[in-house]
Amino acid sequence: TKMPQKIIIDTDPGQDDALAILLALASPEIEVLGITAAAGNVPVALTSKNIRKVCELAGRTDVKVFAGCEGPMEGSLFTAEYVHGATGMDGADLPEPGMPLQPQHGVDFIIETLMTHEPGTVTICTLGPMTNLGTALAREPAIAARIQQIVLMGGGLFEGGNVTPAAEFNIFVDPKAAKICFGCGAPIVMMPLDVTHQTLTTAKRVAAIKALGTPLADAVVGWLEFFERFDEQKYGTDGGPLHDPNVIAYLLKPELYEGRFCNVEIETDSALTKGMTVADWWGVTTRPKNATFMRHVDADGFYALLTERLARLPAKG
Ligand code: RIB
Ligand code: CA
Image (cartoon, rainbow, N blue to C red; front, side, top):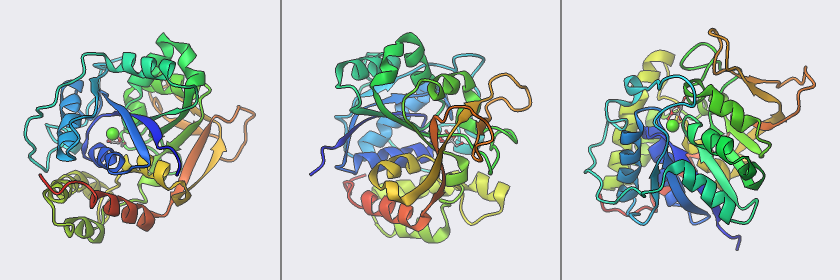
């Protein structure tokens, strides 16, 4: 059998981040070397706590969790309590975590892990603003050639943005970090809003998770029902987009996704379009291709995978 894929998850939980972490921890095809907390949906003090709450919910107090940067590489932190609630994971009430944070800074963990593992054997999954990876690349450019691939949730093209008409949240919060990552030369697979707006938390899909009947499933349903309300209002849909688990689902079943290898540049200066992922989908420029921009997902296949894997996690709350 194939060796498990070694990954680092960089994340800003966030209810959708939490589901991505659970999906990874439930999947033997993946070895999570560590989880680094990003500042995004809520400040890093909360995201580093939320990650540990999710690990404990999954019965995985062995996972190494690191706090990352307090804010973007440039400018001030923009958070999203209006979507995720004050805790960042409203909708389920989990106990304060008992497991410790690692003393090492998340950026140092990313650098050390990439420098000590064989080149091309560690995948970096970013589920929030790309501050930690961007900072690691700026501090130690040699890691770029050692990254197996960067698989990220972020950006958008045909769907536009979700924070401004042009920019998606993860890129908007730290466009400088995103620019560094997209320019570093490592293989990139991006899950933009164009994909995540197809994986809606419809009532039928949430009911299937509820039917698992475990305390973990109840927590997940609580998160989804809280998290989806903002986007249901905004888009008038049955359910809201479930963004981040698409990154992990891609590692498990890439055949669920279709996209195009093309050039993607990040707008960092314009007041109007700062944080926009300018994807040359139609090849109208000669800019070098640097990312696989995913545009379609088998949404039912995605939810079947997610639900089946959640069922594998320990029943204890
Ligand atoms: O725009 C959606 C992204 O922003 C998701 O990663 C969500 O968790 C928030 O971080
Ligand atoms: Ca996120």
